[in-house]
Image 1 (tube, helix red, strand yellow):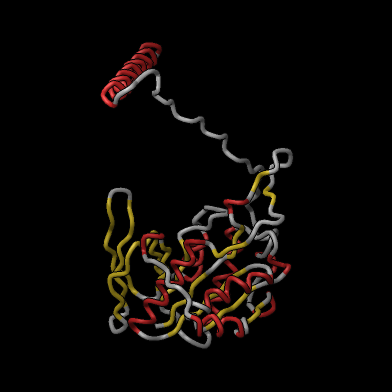
Image 2 (cartoon, rainbow, N blue to C red):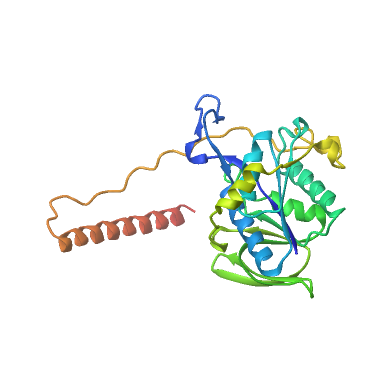
Length: 281
């Protein structure tokens, strides 16, 4: 079994701030991390390898410093790591990004088959959840989204059985291979890198591919190939704190009674507002 994992290095959004004047993210001095959902994708690919044999290849499209994220993936036991980087890719939206990653996977398939492609369900910097499905659509393979469990992979039947997270439970889906899976954090608990693998990662040579390494249309790259434009980015307003019931309540029963009274009053006011809206119409 050969699994390919698409990984992205992202800014730690817990430390990113929005410039109120320009509406842009201030990334200076903000550390970069592996997209959290992608770590679970790497872990699941490694579990497939541990159980069924084969290898794991990790690819990332990004600036040269993204080699750090790829080397961290190598420390988990990944066999091959490829960075796809070129100034021509700058400004790519999800459409252009999925195009480049799909072309990279096509190049990998020229020398060896690819059975499973793993992606995190979304990235924490863009939150679109579009790149994984975009890759699957371009490669014309099955896409299985929001995967919370892989029940079985059958190399002989060329099938994978998964549980897909839905609003009130899960769906069990059987799909033909090759297939692309986007995964959620409930899927697994990522392993810790062993000391020998950390040493291997430190010495590991990440492969570097640019636009000339791939069979790509220049018009589909970067800003030219990106119909999406971002008009403004802003931080949501700070939510006010909740009401504290401390007005002379000296015991739990009194405090609970005061809380229930407030809730009943608010419910009654809400019903009155609804009736007023109906009367107006």
